[in-house]
Length: 233
Length: 287
Ligand SMILES: Nc1ncnc2c1ncn2[C@@H]1O[C@H](COP(=O)(O)OP(=O)(O)OP(=O)(O)O)[C@@H](O)[C@H]1O
Ligand SMILES: [Mg+2]
Image 1 (cartoon, chains in turn orange, red):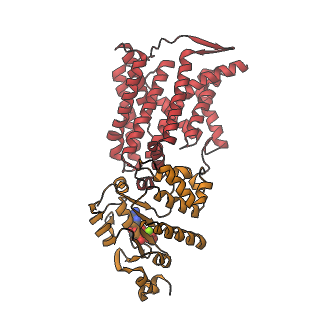
Image 2 (image 1 turned 60 degrees about the vertical axis):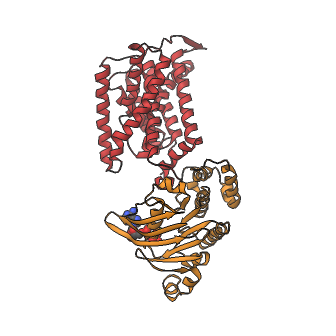
Image 3 (image 1 turned 120 degrees about the vertical axis):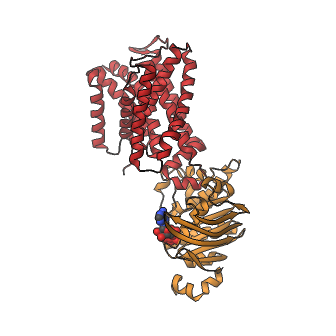
């Protein structure tokens, strides 16, 4: 469904992603794990048109979307729930959710809005409050719900557990599991490798802008190198 | 005394409405692009001049000239964005600042060349005066107040209730996140400049009909417009509306009770006092 071939990403003269190839099949949950600064976020941003791809190609459902503009990528069916939540702080919870459906013109938007608020009751409770006033965990829920409002065919999550208390992290992963069970195709970037590998079907390990290991999540979890470096065993 | 205060409040509402319309344009442009669009006042007055020209030289009825001027305003807004500000979009902020100053001088020059240095008043033929109790309200002033309210409400509805309006807010709050929602961020500055300039032209027409347009007037209004933004709280729509109204009424009361020569001084003194007590402005958020 989504296929990255040898993509490279540079900031100015500095290349930070050195030819990465990733495949995500429909209905699959794929995790990208690896240390800080390895280039995971840059890869996701390159897919979404937030940073230019300086080499290689991005294919989505057989179409070439390399360096397509951000809004075209969303229209193609790819939505990202960005690192650090990035809700619109002064807009209300409802307005944030409706922004998620920005590219949609169908009549089911109100029904989806209600569905999101059933899934995240706290959002219904806080619906007319400014999103910036929510707690970190609540903002993460809002960012996830906002991404789903687009009815994407693939949803990219960039470190949804970042900066959250352990209890909240667990509930974020429960939510992700729920979204996966709904049949959503997921590409997940996580520092929390254990949680990510438990959730994902397959995973890629990033190191300094390259993929150094790939395989089924179960196998990765028991690989000695991964265990030592990322799972703290 | 009470009658006099009410009278000056009504007078102040008309000029306050003009300030609000100018300030709304400035605040939307600032919110999206971070540009202090100084040329806004001069372009607004161009709209007033154009209306005057269409009515006096081309014999158009005022009600026909106004839509032509507003449409021209939208077009000018698009041109200003594409030709003046887009090229410096990714450059240092000082570049946009210099462009804004240069554009102001250019538009002032064009206004002077095309319309001369004499002050002009748009002839509206509206000369009736309504009386409510002891308060007199010239018909024209009433229509200006109503038009300002209609435009401000329309703008609020646009921003709060339409997808495009929400996209404008979203881009102002978080550009990258707005892209991830599927907003075409290239088209947003165009829309913002089109709408802002049309609102400015509406204000220019009001100034031309109520008072007079002359060289330099536009610059005065843009300074007041920025004062309104700071008074109301930077980036706040309701703040701009409250700030403009307060400034208009304060000026008017100062002119009525003290002296019209001091109205600007008094208005700015009030502004300074407000900012001493509330540095974030009337409706601004605490930083
Ligand atoms: N806007 C930018 N300009 C310049 N360099 C950047 C920029 N964004 C990221 N980088 C650099 O690119 C490299 C990869 O960063 P990236 O954010 O993709 O890593 P990451 O794997 O997501 O890390 P983390 O787990 O900390 O989020 C880092 O060395 C970072 O310093
Ligand atoms: Mg990252």
